[in-house]
Image (cartoon, rainbow, N blue to C red; front, side):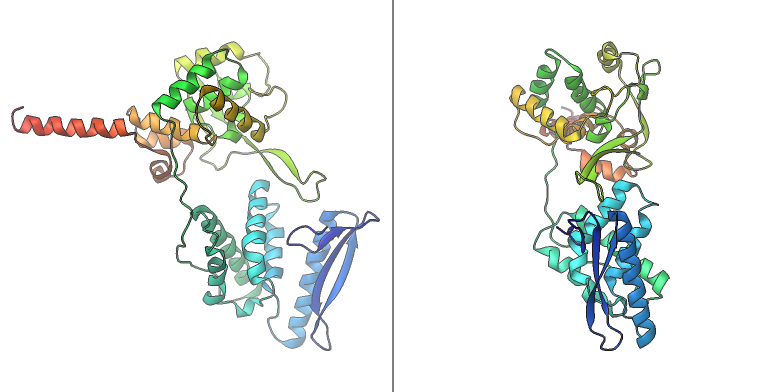
Length: 372
């Protein structure tokens, strides 16, 4: 079966076959062509080269820019594979195949204009995509347009968009009652997996960061935890299992950070240190993030707390920090954010009790004004 968005399939004889359509020299009618190779990667490279050469030849014959958008896009995607993190490359390719490719597949790059490009977002409007996905679509689309401008001398190099209706996911933190229930359960018959949850709610680590944390990343003398890597399961081209667990650098340069540890958390962690360089919560290899999410859901259920996403631990940590007087710049650096606005807008959720304290403080000030 062909991979979604590609005319590439594995034949029964073990070879990979790639098909493409190109203009016939005499009639100009698009006809089908096939190429073959021993591996998926090889046939993909040959397919891209053949499609590009065919359309360039047609362009030269006709004196027109007949190279279609999908040819340019595939060239750009192939070009970023070796210069971007593999996870980023997979994300960009997935965004292109899922949200852009079908909308612009057979359109010559010379015909692109604002109205055509706007259809990419309008066609996806009914899906009520999150603002993050919409930004990713725009990012990928503009990088392809920029590539087309520099390599094929097109005049149109950037697209803008009106903000569409998006799905609003209410981000919350665990309330005080939920935190008490969860922590009591985790501390009762503590083990290394429960400890990992306590580390997350105490430091704001992401799921991939705790799953790939090694003992060498914890300096017990300085009481510092270093975030040096992350792990995630992502699609792998031509891989027999379609996905693979892959370690990589943290999410961004700001995500590679050092987090000071409290005296209490150091006392809690140290007894589990075995003197090795193994992974903290899974010994000789990183923990599968999905497996750890399932464990977290089990812990919540056993603690009598309703189902929550693992990321709520990060939100809870940030909210607790703010409620206890942590300055926003320090918190932003501990969380590994590039901008304090991200910290404020996404990760700070003042509780009703905190707001009440502020209101009472204000009332006390007014009382002083009138002598009460």
